[in-house]
Length: 273
View 1 (cartoon, rainbow, N blue to C red):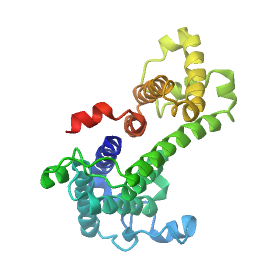
View 2 (cartoon, rainbow, N blue to C red):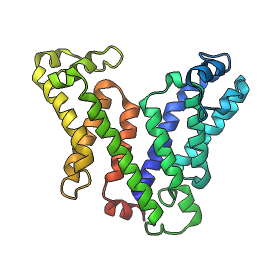
View 3 (cartoon, rainbow, N blue to C red):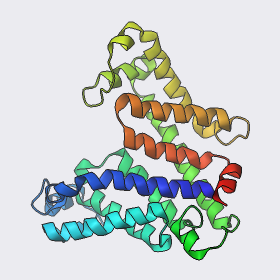
């Protein structure tokens, strides 16, 4: 299942892009004397499933050693080297950062955690990988485990898109057709000149309602043989536009990788042989 390998590569690259830039700020973000102490995290977000190794590895050198090991695991996951066990290390490492400082986590972190868990359950690394080159054998046909995990990845992406649309229905700005303007004018996300959009508000209305339509229709139409190309193309355009207009490049990249799990595999299989 080449689609799973695309997800593996994309998730590994996204983890590197997300965590490599914070290397110089490890003590500030995750150290025991950083923004938030382990005790404060436990008191505010505590629970049986929120412990992190970084609760005890708070010294700068310990953090750096852990971070280096984690980045190596992420790179190995993307390259498909020793995939059967580095994927677990990447998943555990990602969760350790999320649990150590939940203040700075957001939707992308949870999407990556979910995709990583599904990759851990999937037999990946059999194509487009260093493991494949090391074994020197052609990839075997799709197994039941691969098919099941690919279906779960697809379900995850469909559910994310659907509930993103459902949540939007709770906002008056989406019903009124001006929600996209609110996002474009937000100083935190502003990434394009607004003058043209201000002069053509009908474009903003169209983008607002089109976003709702695609997100709500996606989980129902993406499974159909005839409707999949159209709805998948619309979802890819929507996600790429989100990245370009709002500067959410990494989030858009991960969601595009997730959408590619729905790509038909015939030409991908030929490219991998």
